[in-house]
Length: 151
Image (cartoon, rainbow, N blue to C red; front, top):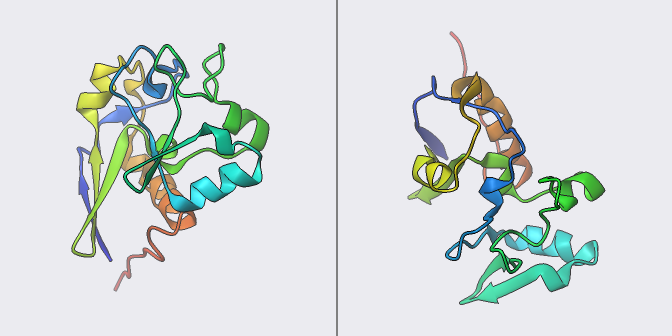
C-alpha cells in the first residue's frame, strides 16, 4: 500500500484538551469506529456506547452532541481509564481514506475549524508527527509496514 500525505507538513498541531473535537454542541457529528474497536468496547463493557447504522459503527453521543466518553474535564474516559481510544481520535486533526490500495492522509481542517479546535497552529509540525500517525495506523491494522530504503 502506498500513502500520500495531503497536508502541509509544516502545519502545526498540538492537542490542548479543549474537548471541542469530541462533538460538543454539534448536531451532525458521528464518530465512526472500526469493527476491531467495537470488539474492544464490548470487551471493556461499553457495548451500550455503540450505535450501528447501515452496517457501520459509531459512538453514541450525549444530549449536548458530545461523545459519550467525554468527561466534564474535557478528557476522554476511554483514554484515562483504559489507556485506549479510537483511531479517529488518535489521528485528529488528520483523517484517512483508502482509494485503490492507496492510503491518503489528509488534514481535516474544515472540521477542526468548525469545532473551534484550539490546537491548530500550535506545537510540533504535522511532518514531525507522521511517525506517530503511521504507528497508530499500523497498530489498527490499516497498514502493515512502512519504511524507506536509503541507498
